Length: 124
Image (cartoon, rainbow, N blue to C red; front, side):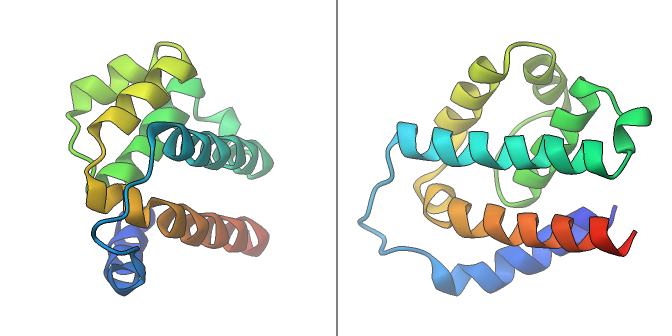
């Protein structure tokens, strides 16, 4: 999947752009950033007509695949379980699994993904 390769490149590039090691990002901030990304993600999936082949659960699992490529530790079974429940519960569960390093680079990572996704949907 192209997004996995892109996520790997973006992760490497963003390693130099992280916040100071002692800076902590609270759950609410990360949760809001994740929710904002997911809102954009859903919009782009609909806009690219991928919604004709992906349902809500598959769309969320694909987003979690990208988070996993960025360093989030989560099993395939957990992804499907979280995606089939409420989005609030999923966001809370994902945020609780994020390491401090992942939290520090998450905003930059999602902004880069949004740029890539936006570009890819325009090219299509």
